[in-house]
Amino acid sequence: MQADKWRPSASIEALKQRALVLQKIRQFFAIRDVLEVDTPSLSHATVTDEHLYSFSTQFNHPNTPQACTLYLQTSPEFAMKRLLSAGSGAIYQICKSFRNEEVGNFHNPEFTMLEWYRPRFDHLQLMSEIDELMQLILGCDTAERVTYQNVFKQHLGCDPLTSTLAEIQNLASQYGHAELAAKESNKDTLLMLLFSQHIEPQIGQDRPCFVLDFPASQAALAKISATNPLVAERFELYFQGIELANGFHELTDGAEQLKRFEQDNIKRKNVGLEMMPIDQNFIAAINAGLPACAGVALGIDRLLMLAFNCSSIDQVIAFENSRA
Image (cartoon, rainbow, N blue to C red; front, side, top):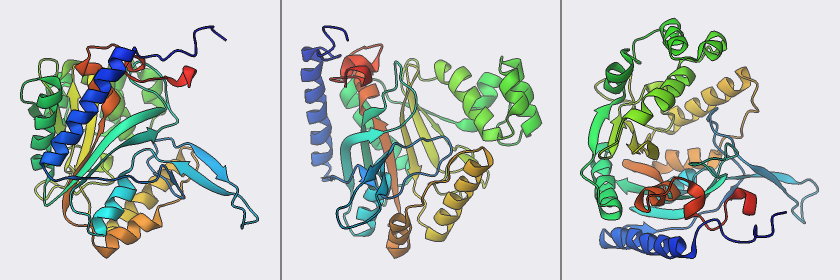
């Protein structure tokens, strides 16, 4: 073990600046009368998305003969929506989230999430509020807005909504992903690869960029557009090569939400992944009356990387994974 491994990965000065930014964020929401909430990190259910990987642990309850599986949450979304259904009104949360995925300049298995929900907002109104927060924290210009379809047309010369799987496989091969393209039968997986590798680095360089109207097949928790059934009312926010936020005009149909989760699990099974337990409390909350709302999850650590001009997430968190 390295002799200095006990030391924090971020400087003390960076941690002091981090505290000031968190204070600014809380003031931002206090002014707008948005309630701060705190929900569990451990849950009996988890996300079904085949592209998200949850940590799990065993809880040995003293009154139960068998241990039960609990999952560290990839975001506080399901619990926060249960609060919305219970009548909380506008809410936000700054919390730890956990994903059993990669470690790198932009990733740590444990990270800090800012998530908030606005009843009576649609995704466009929420994007405007996010834009205000970005300008407050980063001092940046107003964000631009582009559709997922147009950004693919502009940078890769294809229409992601109407292109066939074979056409997307061919495009991926042209961009150096022939081996993966030959065996990948999920069009969305290839689109995500092309987007992350060949579009993300080119957008939002001078000012933040919202990409909106994602394919309906890539938005399990969002409303389908009333004007175009091929797209969902979902957006992502990018700035200087970093994905910062993912938001939705939230789906409020419990039966449809359950159907989408079940379809996710079928996809997981088809690619050899474990099927995940569906959060029935979340479904019950939607059925009880999730209000029309928009919500977003924003990565605090990545926001701080931009605010402090850092190249690695390690520089803005007290102890990155290898020092934890």
